[in-house]
Picture 1: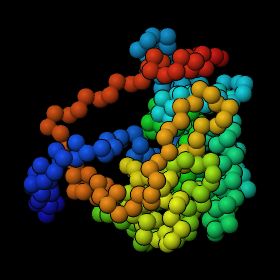
Picture 2: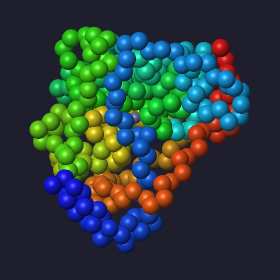
Picture 3: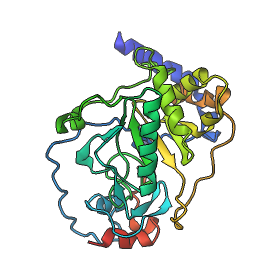
Picture 4: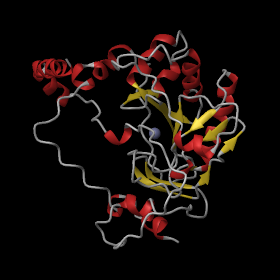
Length: 323
Ligand SMILES: [Zn+2]
């Protein structure tokens, strides 16, 4: 039964071959499996990574260097470079327990950010409480010195991005075990065409709106099925929807991004998202058969070479090399 279904699927996809070619030409974002972020379980005993044989070799992936720094670079806060190509000095940690948030997966040591991001998270947590959300469960932010990561995320490199779970904070302080092993809930239905009515609630829409309406937030990334639901449920106040962008993954958490802080003169800003609510036909790409079930290429694409220090702003070399 499963085999025949699979065959049917292959035949169907083969039948839309010409459409695939059109997709390739369309200005649609390429799938980035790094951002699918399944929120894997953590560990209670994180082992330090073994030292690198040749840390100074130009071919050493930058993620291997940044992933071995457990502490921030001291000094004033500086977000350097762009969201997917940069590093961070003067990072602050988001405290693991706040009045309206708790940090998950402590073993990853990714609850670091530009202090501007910490302030925004604290504000969103307080505002979310006002719309009936008990508190935020915060997932990955950045590493202590930002930079690329060994697992997950193409962005989150400059301390201006944070992931927030669609699971509300419970009424108790979570144990270490709960923080490492509790799973996040997928909000999207099995067919990926809409939210799952068994788990999606209006309060989750209010939570996203609250985050998007924060003046410092420039983008909020959610699964396209969630964006579709927000478009349907938003009513007449729709301005905030322009900041909510459909992206791969982001079905069990959403991702907030803030703009470059004024004092980070080496931070590369991103152009503001297109005006308009981004609803209706703007979402068509995401629900095409060829997007939902892409045919694997005949020749697998060569994996992208890992980013090295040469691909990052020059000052990041100093930041990662400091003790
Ligand atoms: Zn994220």
